[in-house]
Length: 242
Image 1 (cartoon, rainbow, N blue to C red):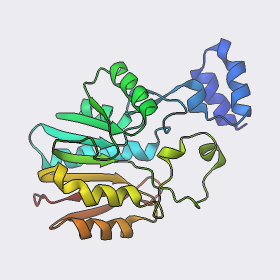
Image 2 (image 1 turned 60 degrees about the horizontal axis):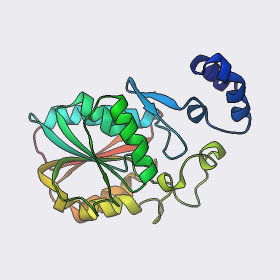
Image 3 (image 1 turned 60 degrees about the vertical axis):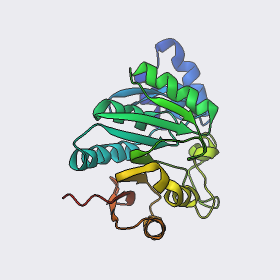
Image 4 (image 1 turned 90 degrees about the horizontal axis):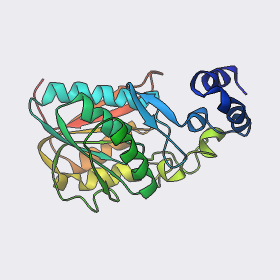
């Protein structure tokens, strides 16, 4: 057991739950699942084995997206969060921007967690069970997604592989399946002026740029770094305003 994980449990678990928590930690359970919640953008987000644990990179995705929204839109926006998981992205955007947010996921259990978190954080989000756009009828100004993007043959940490939902981790086509599906079909679900925001795998930027240029016209694409200076985000827009 790492000292920092033990300290995390001591900080966030009640004393009468600490011994049980340490046993779970010894068995390889992530501290976030043991505690049952994380702080994401100053929101308390409940987590369990049905959803990915929100990470610092995803906080940065949201922060950058808020900056783009403020730059490009001076009205109430409509946002579609694809693969919402715990709901952390949708909840934060609902609280930090002037927007109507729809959040979708294919997992009933993930949607249960997201709805609980929405209520906990006093947000009004429209949740829909949908496989990408299968149950979507409306058009949106912004599409945001942190989809599954890990290749099936990619080495990842055991604590992630053994605990977090594979449905939210892995994707076909060398991890590009969901980006391709979203970019191929999104035109029907976007308003005239739009922004698309993705979290991506560190070596996927060039492939995703090619996919975007294949399916969308007259776009600006920005690849941006995470805290480790790795390519981690792509922002796509057709808005010319600087």
